[in-house]
Length: 58
Image (cartoon, rainbow, N blue to C red; front, side):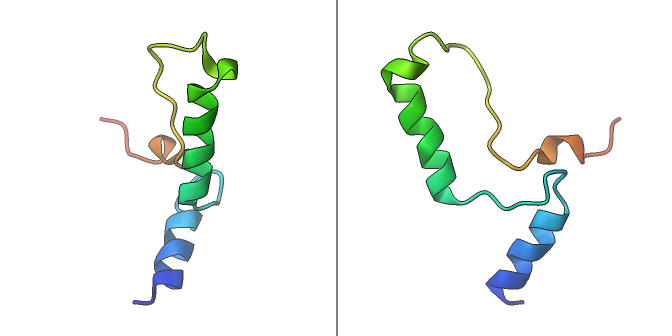
């Protein structure tokens, strides 16, 4: 399976229909480490195209 096909299949399996690139994750880290993120603490911030909504509920 080609990497492009894996990315495509992953993206269609997310509610936002996207694949998150490493640069986008790095952008969040830079923001969190900057003065703009100084009041954010104890949070879980998903950067995954909203895949958590796709798992079956028990």
